[in-house]
Image (cartoon, rainbow, N blue to C red; front, side, top):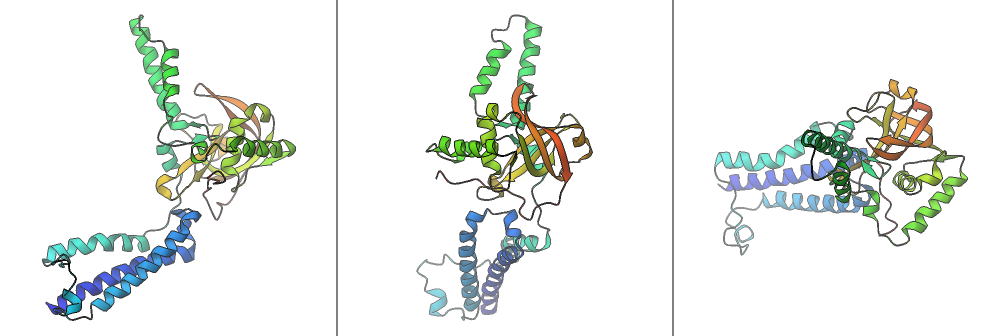
Amino acid sequence: MEEERGFQHFLRGIILFGFTMLFLSLIFTGNIQYYIAPRMMPFIYFAVAVLLVLSVVQILRSTVKAGTAAEEECGCEGGHQLPDRRWKKVLFYSIFLFPVLSGFLLPDKVLDSSVAAMRGVQLNDGVNTRTLLEKQSELDGLELAEQAEGNASKTADDYLAELEKRELGEHYTYEDLVGATDIEDFYGQLLQEALEQEVVQITDDNFLDMLSVINMYQDQLLGKNFELMGFVYREEGMKADHLVVARFSMTCCTADSGVYGMLTQGEQAKQYEEDTWIRVTGTLVEKDYNGWLIPALDITEITEVEAPETPYVYPSFQFY
């Protein structure tokens, strides 16, 4: 019994140490960026330190003999009983061993177009493609019903107006992440800087901000040349000469990640498959996309590029 208790404490220490090593390996390889936003790294460092301390404590406990005061006098009236049956032990420790082993054995993977297809893409930080398709489907169904009945009480336009009043889905736009204080001044300054450039560079640092500027001031930016980089994404039913230059945005971790991008059009787009990383230069135009007029780029130049070291983009927190 004494050896059994000591072994279980030792095993708990090893599991905690395994989590510590898993986090450290992700930090040292840089792959932690696939799962956690940079602003969350202080919490990761704190977690590593706590896990290391707890693992050492558990391993030291395994050397304490059962029945001693250090083992028994915890004041919790037996609340720390260890699993006694074999199946309980296997089930209990497997729950913790599985994520550690899978973390070391499974390859780290960047979010790609398959995830974007499930969540939809925020085009120019304004309209979610998945929501557009859902709305269009509902609208088409309503129009067919009206044609069959001939005397429907609600027109398609009325129904569309109601849909527009609803939220665009569970994915928030970038403006939802920031406050309203001085937001017009901030984006207005970015607009003036863009108007002064011959080709507006949309970079990793200003990706979300510039998409917001385009969405807010598209009338003033029509005809302007833009350059941006991202992976190829195509919505179901999208024309072959259309693609979305997309990037994943992360606020805290992959659980809250969203997909943002700009619709582009041109014959050159046909040769690029999904998830290919490209750099696109084009002229800003207004495009009818599923009944919505949105900003898009007429491609003037497109090239395939290597995936960036940091594949995600992050919101600006200047208004917090």
